Image (cartoon, rainbow, N blue to C red; front, side):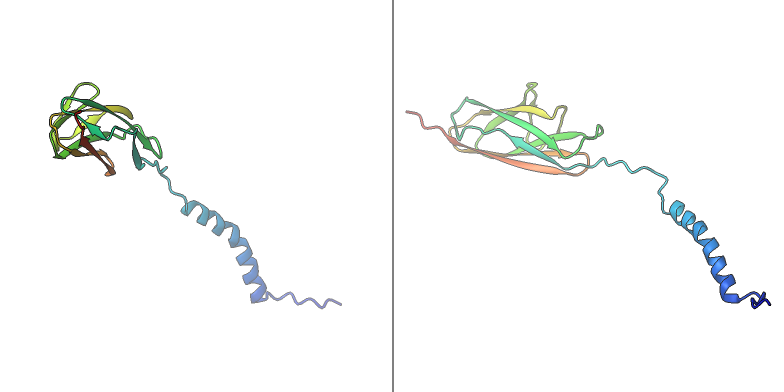
Length: 152
């Protein structure tokens, strides 16, 4: 006596079909979610760090400003530039290679550690801003103010 009905039950056939399709669907979802191109990050913010400088200066005196660019990542294609604007007093700012900087002109920085030299040309308080930017749109401003040195 055989009590098993050999008729195909629609529910069982549907379940078998679904179980056969699960591995195929998993493979399709796995490959369709992959991006074929490797994303390379080239845009890293940076910070301009400056060593302490004197608070006062006299006419003709030169102050050395030691600077370091600290980036949160490293990408060889990053280029940095520097510019400055003096809004109080008179003086000259130059890079360590003796390149004299003109106000608001942009100059390329080739190293992440560099020195600036500020030469006072007046006996009054002097103030200027230095802007460093990269070719990815990041920019940082550092302000300097030197009081006139008291002559005794």
